[in-house]
Image (cartoon, rainbow, N blue to C red; front, side, top):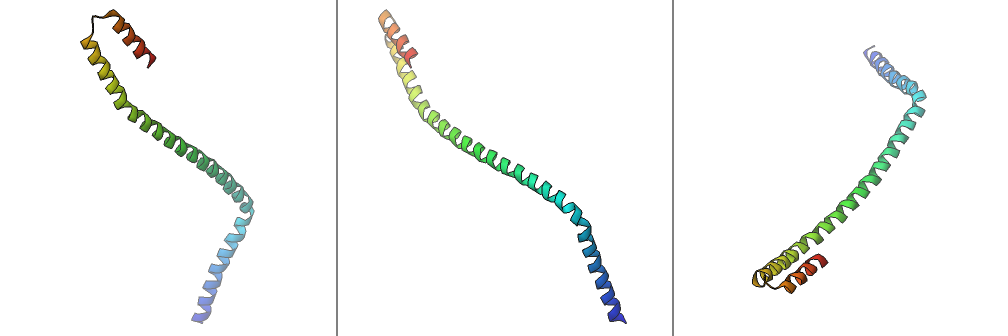
Length: 104
């Protein structure tokens, strides 16, 4: 009798699981559509993330280039300022200096 009762309980549990599965079948099409939309959104986000990563890498390279030019620019400015201090009274020197600075 106990064994039959255990079998009945197991049968009822499985029946409830199967009935729940059957109840969810009408919603299956709707759930698949939702999953398809979510997958499409994820695909778009992946593409945008890849583009963003590429832009970040390009920006990093540009920053490295700019950073490597800063010491050269500072050295040139120091060089020009030193020459200004040495020859401030010559009028043609200052014009050349202005043209050189504007050209850079």
